[in-house]
Image 1 (cartoon, rainbow, N blue to C red):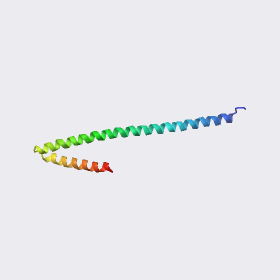
Image 2: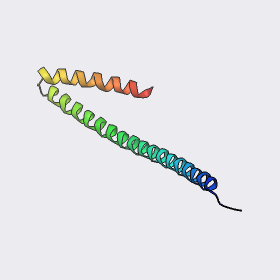
Image 3: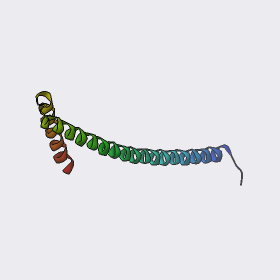
Image 4: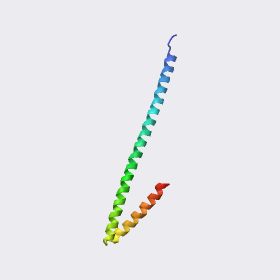
Length: 92
C-alpha cells in the first residue's frame, strides 16, 4: 500500500474535523460551567441583598417609631412595596 497525496489530505481532514469537534465540546463544557458558577454567585448576591433590605426595613421602622416620619415613612412604604413585589415575582 502506497501513501499518496490524496491519502494524506484525507487523513489531515479527518484529524482537523476531530480537532474542531473536540474544541466545540470543550467550549460548550466551559460555557455550561461558567453559567453554573454565575448562577450560584447571583443566588448568593440575592440572599445578601434580601438581608440588607430587611435590615434597612427594620431600621426605618425603628426611626418611624421614634417619630422620624417624613422621608422615613415614604422610604419604608416604597421598600415594603418593592419587597412584596419581589416576593411574588420570585414565587412564579
